[in-house]
Image 1: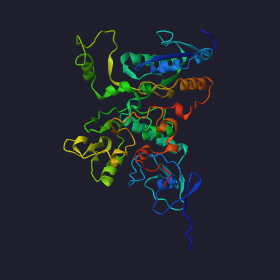
Image 2: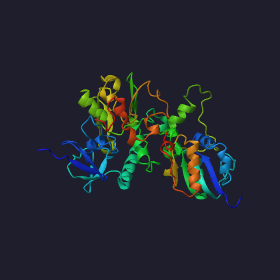
Image 3: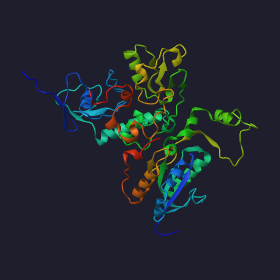
Length: 247
Length: 180
């Protein structure tokens, strides 16, 4: 007996999926862009940034955690959902200190790229300007906590791939923040190394390799010329992994 | 005052004048623009007070009492107020001082800084008082349009103003909108 191909429908387009795939997995395989920041195909989904929220059979669900089920009717690229995404992105901008002209990640930053995609022209809300530290102690990497968006990709990469547990999120609610697991709290006192997976997954400018940050001039970077919808995630390019959509 | 011309005022608050330099980057198109607009208060005319205007272009965030005063003067006089550039958008590079107390900033600049001679924190009454934090302008007054960029390119400013003057919905190409 030949199994009938299972499909879901995203914005009217029927796409196939395999058992066990989330809506995000199926969408990326079909080259449909669903905005996201905390999702990375190599890690267990986290569902925390909420940017990938789509409408599944009339209910809001995060595409990165919702399993694909045959016959689902999904809305993704709608005015309402993109307006919600814009508001979420604006909140991420005002919650940290995201001064793009002063950030080496500019042009390669996924937060910035998602903001461009959702048409963010102002930060709209009142800025928190939180006081957060900078940790330049490591010889090869700098950690700038001002730009952390709590996606936990470094936490997951360090725990699940590197098996080092170097990063964690501490505190709750508005006090949640990234911490480094060493007696001093400094990166230099961990065994964080250049080849670590955690060194490549940061979607923003919070974990940066030293001395390589301006090798590509501003204006010629990943998102300077093309939308993230077309070129995909920056951290996967850095990791040498496949671009989204290609399995 | 010419009867049919759109009156435009511009100012740089806590900015570096880079957005104004970028505005001048529209080059000879400025002459074409001047057939449709005339300038009120702007660094180009050196008029000190803003009169009734159609459009106000604001560069920079707000870092001192005078910035707040000028911004409110613009809001009162301009029908359409535009935030131009990264500093107006979110405070920009001047907002990096928001990490430190004002006292620490002043002491670092005027007392302990490298190469400081005759250390003294300026307190002349003519110097505007600094605010504790640098703020983007949308936190002070209502802003009608935002044109991000550090600076927005001359072409972006040109396209923006043309579409605004034509009464069209403003639509800029992907590459024209950037935060850096």
